[in-house]
Image (tube, rainbow, N blue to C red):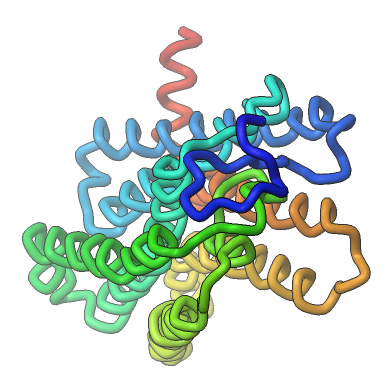
Length: 315
């Protein structure tokens, strides 16, 4: 370590990431499932992008948003896992101050982007089921592009205050972060300053952005389910609901692990720190791996195209 964890300093040039504190001797073994999840996330999401790009029948709003989701998962997993694996394998714990802020920003920004993409996908399903005759005229390519830009700009702007605030704080306690990546909470715990503005803004993001996204999705699917139940036959209801199932599974894979991690952090106070850090990282990494699997298994067009590619290569 180039900086002592007991020396007073206000402008650290580096932070020290501990990885899974208290489980250092098991880092190599812990790295195996994380490496596997990262490899599957890369393979799965790149496969989704390739299939949608090369199959003209998939050039529709639903699959454009799916490509956005795949890119977001790639960026999020790559923002976290390579550094995590370098800690596990090479004990490479140092991270530059600016790199730390950049990593924190990317994780926050693309997490909010992911939430916005699910809102856009819910909107697409709503129009496709509740107003199918006008789907192609409402969600045209220019409209889809504008929605995508709005999702990205909203996230980029709203999450910018977090690194801006963190860059202004003095850090006089320690430069050691007992995590695998630079999180906002990790930097707040190290700051020797009044961080209430950050806390208030974090609550605004939680309830005013993520909360509203979740409410919009729930209301949208309430209308979708009402439209489905009005269909005349059971087969029609089953087939129509099947077009939403992959989206619902992907939403569950996004929200449920995060909720579980938050509940463990809040209520399991007697659980060792390394368990909290491990659970948080598993929940975060698992999501990026599950999305392409969900859409590959639940979406007929992607599944058929995937098997065509496999059979063509085998032949």
